[in-house]
Length: 388
Image (cartoon, rainbow, N blue to C red; front, side):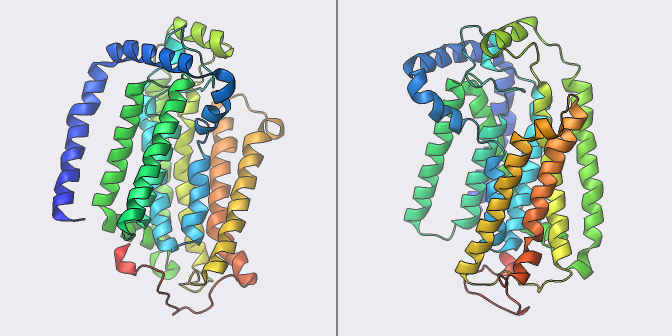
């Protein structure tokens, strides 16, 4: 990062931390009042029959974004950078979850009976999980993979990202699940995650490399990640039990939620806790890559774009299949009423299996002749190791 850019980024980080986020906390009530009027105008401006399906699609991406990006960055490009990208984004989603549990901000259709809850999203509103994931994943990947592209391509990527975030934000407000100031707060936290990751890019690249590659020299790091992941899980459980579960729930929230969505007096703030399972996705991806290193050439991924594309499509298909398995049939296969069972089977198991599929696929790809067998192979399309 250039010196001037470095100073600008640090200044913006300080501005967000010291001014914007505290200001939102102090002005939350008046912002909610003005936000309700804005949402009412948005909902009255768009026809339900015409726009509902489109907005509902934008507002329901959630896990899909990172689950589909992970196979691409791990198998289409250099997995050394891919591991870093997945590590940063998984831990970033965990941080957003932790802040969401601490904030405990209600959704518009909980507070105001005049706001329709078209999507009936459960869990607290800010920082928003889906919008945060979309913004963090897209802009971090652009900064990682397009920084050496032409100026025209970079501008196109940034413009497309702006359109996606604007569309998703408008969709969320139309659905009645988030205020405008909560959109801004979510994007501020995404900015902090992405910018801090860029400031410590080399250090994060080194951590990712020693955590996922060269099994003989670095296998001890797997134990560090086991301990660290358990500590992060316990931190999330502690916040959930001591802060989120003890928070007073206004009876009007329940009444308005039941009126809009028939949520049956269950605002399901546990839905805000479940995304903390992304730390297990990160853990299993790192462990899977380390295991692959025991029997695969160090640069197994250095193949033609054709073979890389086949690997990517196959892992994408597996990720999509697992997602449908756990998101559409799990309620019949494993009926769960308590938070622990839902967390373990619907999220931890889902993310862990998805990560292992992505990380361990090279072992199958080797038998399918989709990998390189030359440990010393080099390719001009890959970025040198020192840039990770």
